[in-house]
Length: 99
Image 1: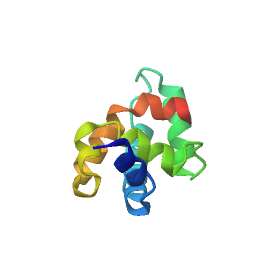
Image 2 (image 1 turned 120 degrees about the horizontal axis):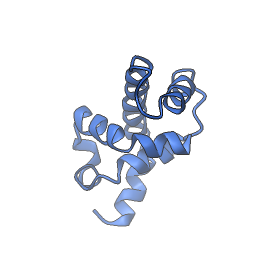
Image 3 (image 1 turned 90 degrees about the vertical axis):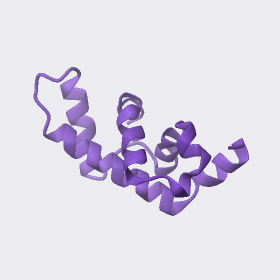
């Protein structure tokens, strides 16, 4: 996919919304994880902000992180929910760092 296509996809409201759902699901999983998980407090703080809709990451930033996956970037509208969840989970540490 050309950079122009990725730039267009990142602004698609439906794609952004699907990415947000994947992020919220990841936050729910973190909220239920064991306190012994590495970097637990930072993860919980981030999950709390996401679940309270106070995350610092914008829908556009989130979509761009998801579009780092070449399969998703190749055809974002045809990507499955599982594809999006896999990518959000894969870049979770980056999402937590962004906010």
